[in-house]
Length: 372
Image (cartoon, rainbow, N blue to C red):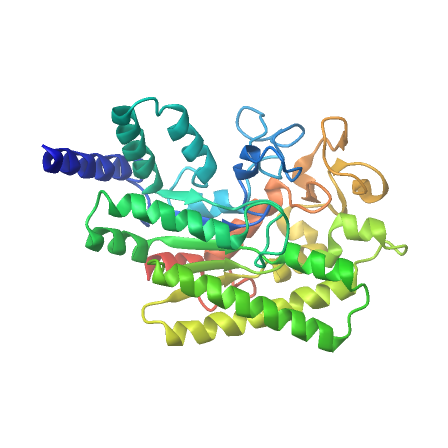
């Protein structure tokens, strides 16, 4: 009877996953990172202030509701997932866990909800957490180490219901999307306002060593296809402009971001030769933001310095809250709030990283990674 039940559970897992991703180009998308990729995990962290589950966030999301995304609507992870044939980013991992826990009032219900949750996971999960970084010391939300731990738990649930071969095959074809590093750079800069080249190099080396460890852990858990978004031109975010007496970009922060990105590029190049079957694509958020500031009309934008939602100088000395000033035409703004892009910018980025020119993505596009 137990064997029959296990077989039925496995069939349910495959059936739900297949029906949910019939048009998808890959079995699943697993998302890791910070607020640039968080779709609501931090809504389940009552102690965290790094949340976006209130207006004006989500004003352009279907239904006009806040979802935990730091945006007026969809974010880059949504547009990349849509390009792969999904309806948007996979759901926040903690939302699936909460739903499972809420419905688990008996052992039989526990088994059924766990199967349903595992079936949902088969098309992916989003582990990203606003405020987190590559380093465990960055932020107080869900660290990258913890995010990967959650993925390991998810894999265990899959392995309890599918053969090792089927799990390995699914994961090897899935996309592992990582968007992280900015918060680490912010933390470093807050403690080193005028870092010299040696300090920046030492910080970058520590970061890349940690990144190396995270990627290898994911690889050993079954990941093979990595879609990486590098560190944006963070010194040009509205908040940094608001803190600079000249109102210009903070170039020291941009230098830190560039150093990190050089390291990320070398790291993945080296890992792809070391680890059999590993493939990767790096979307350059740094280059994309730089390009849009220089030529905003390429994406139909007009305002590239001030935030759409906020307050104070550059509308960015405070964050986006229900009582903040909010622009009427979000499609013309590069930045939604003091740090994050608008839906319009995210859509442009998603298209550029998925199937755009080598200026924005390399050594292959994410589309080519999907098809590899």
